[in-house]
Amino acid sequence: MLRRLNNFIILGENNTIDVHSRIPKDVQISIYGSNHTLVIEEGVTFKKGQIWFEDHDCYVSIGKGTSIEEAYLAVAENGTKLTIGKDCMLSSKVRIATTDSHSIIDISTFKRTNPAKDITIGNHVWIGYNVNINKGVTIAENSVIASHSVVTKSVRANCIAAGIPAKEVKVGINWNRMRV
Image (cartoon, rainbow, N blue to C red; front, top):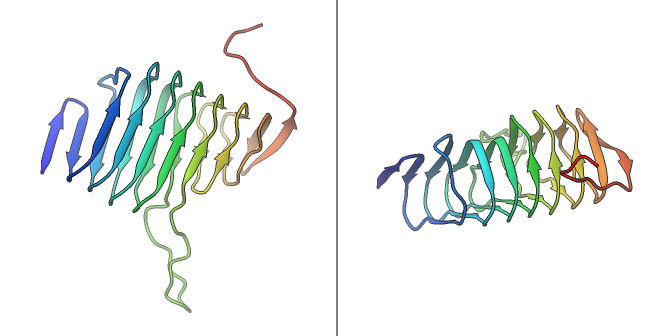
């Protein structure tokens, strides 16, 4: 069954959408498949982008007070999860995906070499402009991901990660939305 409600496209059954914040028309929610869950808590500001679900049983949550300028968030393989904590700040052109989408096959074993993996972003994480966060990554609380970084490995709490691929460049930090 296909339903289009303003910025929602839903093709599937038994999907749960639990939104406690305003979703502007510049944020597209695309759900292809069944048994997906989207949770957006109170006080979330999401100005532009897309949340994309594919296959079945995927989960996306965005925590209370998080602000997103522009992001593409994708859970596109069975059972994958993307969790963004409370009070996070995402800049523009952020891409976060739990999958490479297409399979890469080892020709000697005929097995897939690039399975999808969950992504977890802790509370109070600042993600800079034009950052890519790849599958299997956890970014712990109070961390900063510098602009133009590609995050391929997990990042510890209270540190800055930068580069391609991103590496921890400073530890023992925290950040504040206000200029002090």
